[in-house]
Image 1 (tube, rainbow, N blue to C red):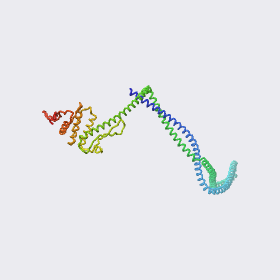
Image 2 (image 1 turned 120 degrees about the horizontal axis):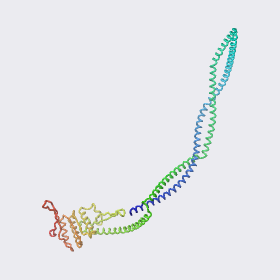
Image 3 (image 1 turned 60 degrees about the horizontal axis):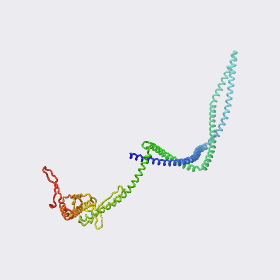
Image 4 (image 1 turned 180 degrees about the vertical axis):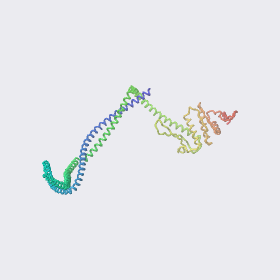
Length: 488
């Protein structure tokens, strides 16, 4: 329950911390959004003004371009028409003259045709009159008159044939005159088009004057500066809108997170969270005080341990020096000692790097890789004896397994002397016992001699020998025999 309360209190504290942090960020974002909104409004208003000016400039520029294009097109057409207008005028004058001639010819032909038609009408009237007379004469049944009428009728028929022949001869000429009249109409349309071209040329000149006037107005308005200002205002507006969108997005995210945290605070898990928070805060403060006291205790203990470590290293090196001087009979190494170096790391992970150094004439160097196998074995035994002598005062059992391996005769004798002195000095300890396991009988003899030379303690009565013997069942068994020192 306490862990759950601690967890809930931590969660609540974290939630309150997050809420306060989010509120501060939300407030900051609101202020930023307000500033950005004001800047965006100002920039947008300026941009709108610049945009209106730019639109007017663009419209004027576009209108100018259109007018220039139209002017260029009309100028090209004008130049083309100017090239064509000279022969057209000459052709027009010639066609005017031809039209006048054709008109006169047409009038003359029309007069001729009118005369012919009038003569034809007259002939028809005469024919009608003759027909009426014939009918009348038929009714009168006068043969003479019939003959006269027939004669006149034959004359009239002959005259009609002549008139029809003349009319047929005049029809091609009439068709030719009609074609000339139609050609005159086409020439008239061409002349009207030329007149329209002249009128368009005048309009083009007027448009050129308008374009020049608009260019002057645009240059007076500073179009390039307005374009640059508009582009800059648009960029600033886009940047401010982008900032505003980012701020609004972050604000929305913070608002959602705030609502989620508030909803989480209303759950059963955070019920009475204020009281639990108060209790846990008391525990927290108390724990902090305890931790502070423990830190002080730890510092004091660490200092004491360091001091104790230094003292023990000094004691160990002192005993090592004494034992080394007793056991080692060579002249190349005066002394050996343990050197400790503290490795870098945190206080909780502090460790020491121990190494064995040998000295000769004030010069020290590491033994690793520089000593023989016998020196290494002897150093190992000496260091173990020193450690046991320093730290195992209440533990009276000391065991050495094959301590004379790789030792020459002199070093064996030195080791025997050192062990004899240790046994003599610890003889008064009730629980002291030295166990030496070896196959070296010479070393055992040396131990007997050295122990016999020591005073102040009782000589051990016997030593034990372990052997391997075959039993009655054919198997081999280990047997321990107690042997008196006198039998050695």
